[in-house]
Length: 270
View: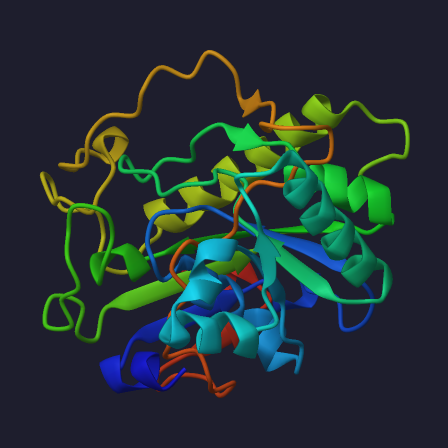
């Protein structure tokens, strides 16, 4: 990830021991920016594991994005066809059973409030079908470089702190209700997000556009949340989309300058 190295980000990675060294797993993360999928993949890449991402099929139509999604072993999702979505689900489950890490953003879109949106149930469906754990991940700081409504700005994000937090594996029972398990995943993710937001090295400046309204920032307040999970469109098993815009800088597994890789919360945020 040469670009991140060039930005001199002060990267803290917490909970790396929660990422399995072998075997299949579903990797999920909160969606605040176009950088999330790179940051979520940082831990697995440190362990010499390259996650496979779910990505919209349209990305294969451009020579540039096609190279990126092919390089990261992305699974194409045809959103125009129920049959195509079901096939993508099957490919993802097969990859999980073969021992791969499959990465997916349960929110399906970037949250402008920087608070987790309701989760779609696809991540849980895949984990249950393949009999593998879910590794919840929360990232914070990457949205200061680029997100919806705030264009790409290296100067704005020069040498900023960025935190990546991996939670304990979540196991979905074979007979567990899909939406109950999805709600559980979201609650864990929300707790991880709140933790790293509240202990962010740059603090939470009042009125700052990148700080959630809950912490006194200038981000828009989240919409009322009547339910914590929503049904995926299409037939049962339809997976939510992964990152919409894979980043061409994804390419190096080394830690960025200043990164601290920890498994103890006190070492990372003490």
